[in-house]
Amino acid sequence: MKHLYISGVSTLKLTAEKCTGCGRCVDVCPHGVFDIHDHRAQIIALDSCMECGACSQNCSFGALSVKNGVGCAVAMINGLMTKGDPDQGTCDCGGDSGSCC
Image 1 (tube, rainbow, N blue to C red):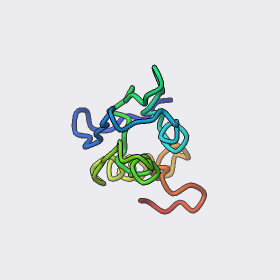
Image 2 (cartoon, rainbow, N blue to C red):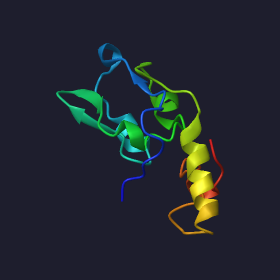
Image 3 (tube, rainbow, N blue to C red):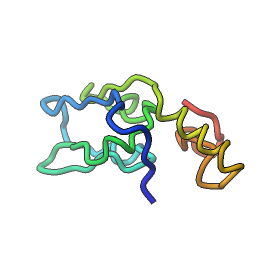
Image 4 (tube, one colour):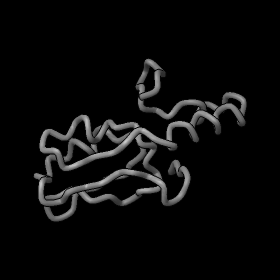
């Protein structure tokens, strides 16, 4: 199931000229926002971005930027509203620790 947050508000930016196609963003993104095409990353699901910053923190080439924003908050609110649904209540950016951002 794709996680979708508030449409059209993500601050995620990709500077394709800086991308080397290493695929690290694909590996660290918990919601499948990226894919590699023609040896460069591409944003394929912008509205799935929760703005956790994992991609930008792990991009050694400075190709990605994002400001922590509404995506994580929406994930937390959805979890509270579903009263603990295992797929909700966390933005998934804390891994096993469960901590957010």
